[in-house]
Amino acid sequence: MNEKKLEPITREPKYGKVVSAISGLSLGVSMVIAVLLGVGLGIWLKSLTGWGWILWLGVLWGVGGAIYNVYLAYKKQQKAMEDLQNDPKYKEYKELDS
Image 1 (cartoon, rainbow, N blue to C red):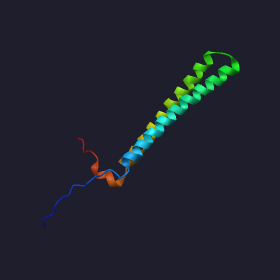
Image 2: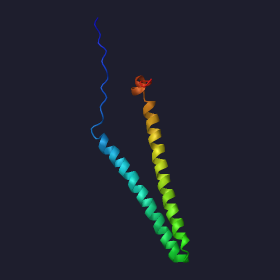
Image 3: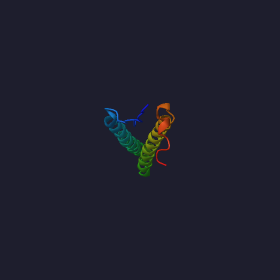
Image 4: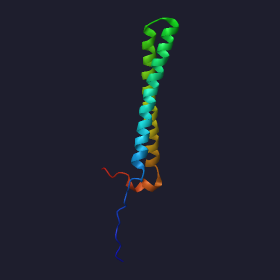
């Protein structure tokens, strides 16, 4: 019999770009909010104590929170990619780059 091997067609989901954009936007918003909360906390502590340097401590806390948000988003993406890699539907596509 004459059997043809068909190449699988991979298409991006209909709303894939929108979902990706929203995910990136939420990361950006969470970073801005973390920094603003840190600055607000620093300003509040400065007004409470009168120490000027404590404002910068609040800024550092906010930047640290933003960096932590990026780390959490990275770990979430890494887990999603590992789950996708182990999905039986995509097992045959491994080692295509080699």
